[in-house]
Length: 171
Image (tube, rainbow, N blue to C red):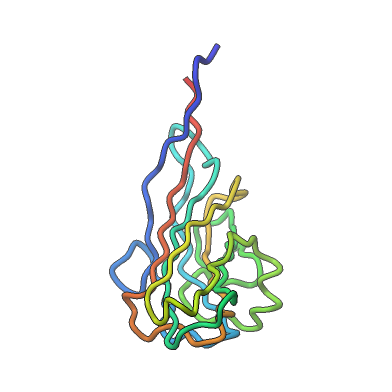
């Protein structure tokens, strides 16, 4: 019989414009628009299996101070295939690119959460930590929908998404 259970953080993966594990280009993303990133590597762990949850650290900035209480939303498309364009919800391609009809497509994805914009932070980077509980599939595709009231910042280094899977160890 097990004597304890704990959560173990897996290897973090980063989506940024260049130089990360995967690509997600958010520079100058217009208000009312959305963009998808590359499909992730498998989130399954050789010992612990499927993660209990995925934690996302989402960092972004607006080109002009955003409107208080508006949002930049993070959605996750889940897939059972490692191939970029195969078995994705919402006709996601699994590759960094713009998303047609975002307000229609996001309903076919899981919402991880929202960064609620603060006008008082101006054009500085704003951060939020979000969790997606019990991922249903082995691969994920991040989708960022900008409803901040402004375009996102033109500087690529102001945008980053880091995903850390957490696994349950029973011993």
